[in-house]
Length: 307
Image 1: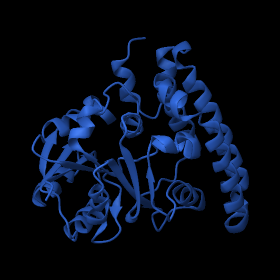
Image 2: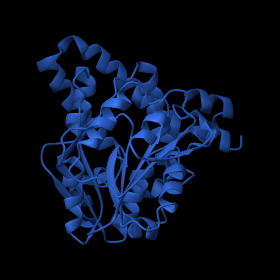
Image 3: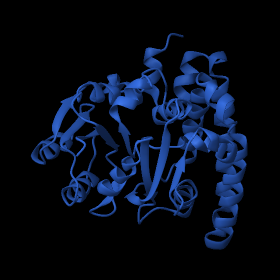
């Protein structure tokens, strides 16, 4: 049987953390190595994780990097075969969630797998649609040739609930430390180009969603624009993001017209803010450092970047 590790980055996980740990305790397949990498929380996140049997590494908050921090955890678990990644706000939806995710690796050509994210029970309609659109009820197994069908969605994956073959992750160069976000997408692209498969496991589920404010929507898409500009090879290889974006907008409008028509003006405004954020992110090299940091959701990233 493969040896499995689990890595969870945390920062002030709050009240939800107790529910997270309770759901994890009920899992039918617990990973063999449990690691929390905490960015100097000021609440009881670390104490609760230690009580649950996790090894905890505490790092200064400014040192956190989506790719670099996760890769440091990978480097510290050389003995495992498969590494599961989760986030502190992704609640395992059933006792067999991790077990079902790991089944994907029965296919020896699967380099990475990710589970379905369901909206939290208190999620608003806009947040709920985003999860239902991006995480359908049907599982998928994607390889390089599928890029003609899925386009840029071929490399879609989320480290909120995903797993990787460690040796293939390392062959792909590991998670990059110089990207602002989407370290998971970057690695998925590398794996597909190298002939590996990405599995989407619709029956391995977590509750995970965000009700973003208007400003956060703008900032998040600014960072997405930065990412895609810095990793232009992804869109050159798998296709641009505009087609998928249009499909999302049409789906969202139809969803809201049926379930929450009063939110249509909000959705239209959000779409405009996303578009503006993405375009400004693509032009980030022409912006002053202070503006980049102000527009960004991941501000600590810019501390490492020269003006």
